[in-house]
Image 1 (spheres, one colour):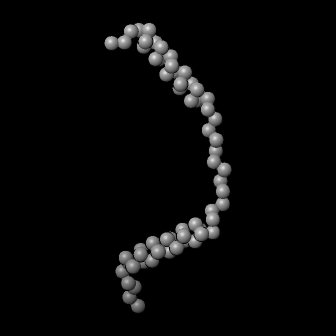
Image 2: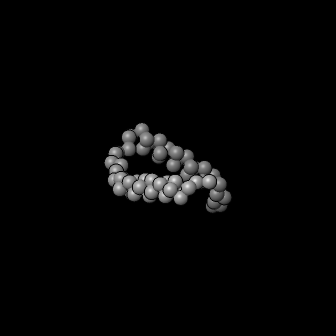
Image 3: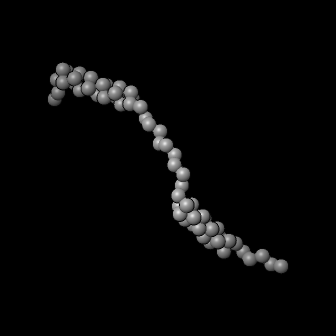
Length: 62
């Protein structure tokens, strides 16, 4: 078993660690513009999913 002094020391270290982690400044990510190829890739997958969902619908009767 641990002694009271050991427990206090561990608790103090843990408290200091929590305090120091709270003091750290969280840097926001600078947003960049999406590349042309990634935009095209996103649009093609969106169109493919749209087409797949269109096929699930019942055909319209004229």
